Length: 279
Length: 302
Image 1 (cartoon, rainbow over the protein chains, first blue to last red):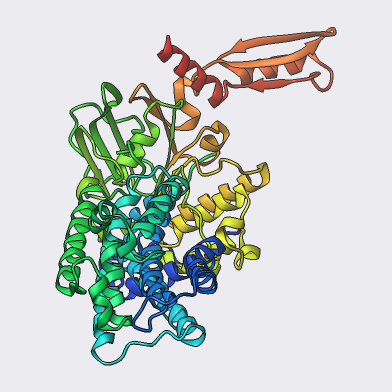
Image 2 (cartoon, each protein chain N blue to C red):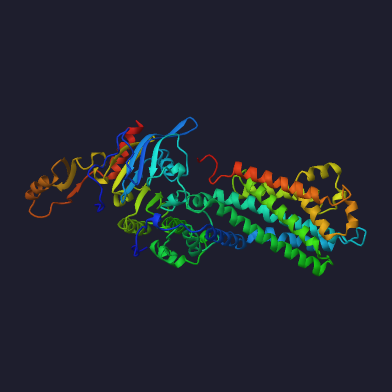
């Protein structure tokens, strides 16, 4: 340590605070560095879905009819699961960790606009989501004859993935407030996500899941994300195998939109910058 | 250690019912905070003047951190008035926070960012941040500029917390037990950093368990006990320390002798006349800050 050499305190009333845009850019950079430099989060969120695709693709090699292989059915499901991991699981664990170790409290004590914290998180989720979709598409198209969407299907792809990611991000932020720390968030959210993946048509054809489990799955976003993405990747002939006999894109939008609203309300009601019981 | 800053002649705490001091960096009247049925802060009055270093002392659970975190805007209060740089912390916005630097007891958290990246990001929330490398130099972490936050040792991490607290060039710096985990040399370096910040006009509210630290740094100390300020005074005068009799110790005829006296200079002069050369084992001592502090806390607990 040495003596302070430069000028002293300034009068902030004479100096403008940094613009929202500048702070948003800073936070986006901080969040992306925090994510990509942490090996656990990268392996868990990015590598795991790719492994699932490769392993399931090698093991479950059968025909679903209409010239569709299981792996082609599996790709939209694993993309939906990848989005769930990049948004809900990632947010729940990282925010619970940052709340428990004091990062959030420390930020609250700075003039950082509070919205910047959430903007940074959203940008990070978007970056990870785009990356994971690209990875899965490249591997699916390169090794498993997955047909990439064309024309208007890209539009459907974009809104289903976007709306699903938004709903799951908001839910993840809300769920983070229930956990005591990152480890307890992980221990709670990971098994729930796994069960949802089993009953929502990710690992098995949704039509093979018992009806009561289908009903449970229909309450959560993952089933609707997977269904909406199947409409993008599978020929329309396969829509007949869905429980409703169609892709139900209107209902997909409705349910995911409802979860966005519910997630937002939960976030506003439950978000805390400090650990419980310290106010 | 003597203070050079301009602290007015009256060093005592404000009297209950006195109006808020509009010129003070921090002005608190009748502050009350309850947790359930327990009252953590019970009618606390406090003024901290611009430019001074004020140390808040007190045993664990006395209400130090609660008081500080209400001033920082982290906690709600149940009663009383608080102004920090003229603003009520309960309603303080970005512009108000931009004038504060906060070193929390719990630290600033883990990070995968390097020290330099963290300081750059943190500084970018403020209007006129210090240069990250300059701040690293100030806290003695220049060699760790490219190390990630979570790889630092406990003491290094605390210095990073302090660096994050001053990167925004604050007018008022809160330091909640800043030197916990420091080795003696790092503490001395930290003290000189705090003194240079004071010379730049930074007001500081320090809480600490180290009484030598309070004595070395603070212009005034306040002892908080059971949610109230028991006394506010210059470190040399706390608990009547300045007027307390000095104890003179020496050895005479092979026997350790001691004498409590209000006039130690005259006593030592007389003593010196009785010996041909040096007075063997001569020592003159006043009660230490720790002595009077422990006495005040003990009385309060009785």
